[in-house]
Amino acid sequence: MKFITILLFVTFLASCTAQNVEQETTTTNNTSEEITLTEMDDAMWDLDNMIIDESKVEVISYSYVNPAQEVNIDIAYKLDSENKISMIDVTSSNWDELEDFNTSVKEVVVGLTLEQASEMELISGASLTSEAFKEAIKTQL
Image 1 (cartoon, rainbow, N blue to C red):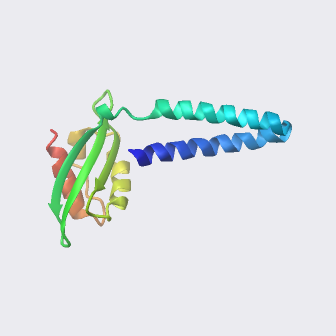
Image 2: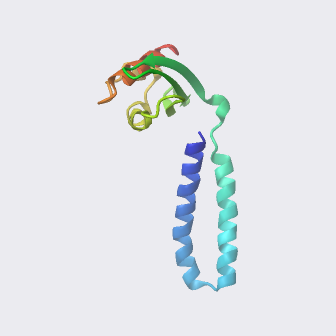
């Protein structure tokens, strides 16, 4: 969750910086600083209002065994008004190899219902994790 918030904030600041370059060339230094501070205040207000309502985020904790060890995964997801996945994040407290799977699963399941997500195709190179993911999702049906 914090990663998503930080990523959104950095992206927003980057876009603000691009706009400031044009404005700074046509204004004096004092005015430029005032504009930058105002835009930063506006960006912080926007960021505060973009934070995901964590009360609507569901978390599934699930464990599975791969050849190296037992893996504990947490699947945090949020459904939209049509019961389709609008946000998903797969993490593990004891396995560092989920980053690529997390990125891929977002591309595959965002926009699907939980039932559709539980029937998704395997993610290449992550067959055990894919099966565990599908089984974990099925616990919510």
